[in-house]
Image 1 (spheres, rainbow, N blue to C red):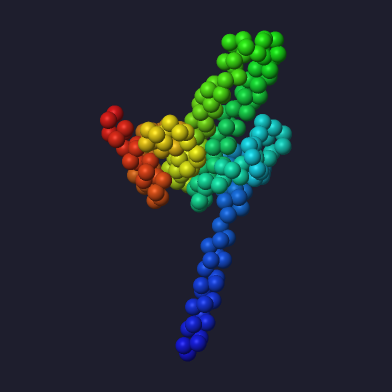
Image 2 (cartoon, rainbow, N blue to C red):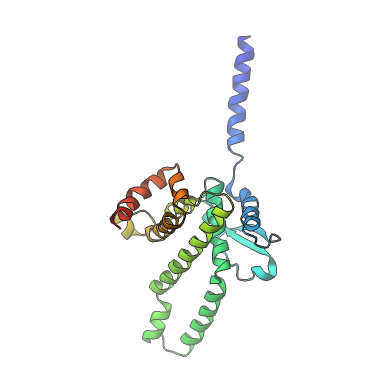
Length: 223
């Protein structure tokens, strides 16, 4: 009898790690992506493909393929967080950011080809600061659109805040004791607090979210 119990225990120990290892963020993208599309009455014939590096979804209307960056998925630990990554990308597509940035790059190329390298307009158009501000503005808009989509599809929208703060932030934020990407995360949190207070009350059980609340709650209380 003792040998049987030991054998059963050993079998359970061997099976549990194998079962736990089955969840892979990239594998969940097609399922989560499909739910986001169908629950938000978007074309359900689109497919999702995980790729390395940055993604370009400017041709999604003709290809019906939505590319998702594996680098972004590295910060997703459950389906709601995968939904945050996918919904942000869909938010960029819905808000026309790819088309806008493509036109901006064409205009930039035309501008810089006719001006000297040290011209102040050329310097401004190529500055990292301007690029980052544009990216921040686009991401804020995509985050909000994505949060709405997540709620409609039944995912916890606070996962958007969590994924954003998991991503690398700036040195200045670290020195100031702020969460990574605090401006983006606070933008989503403000939006959810004012528009979906019941969703915020549900909360989110992870250390990253608790750390964010330590930063965010005093700001909300002061308003």
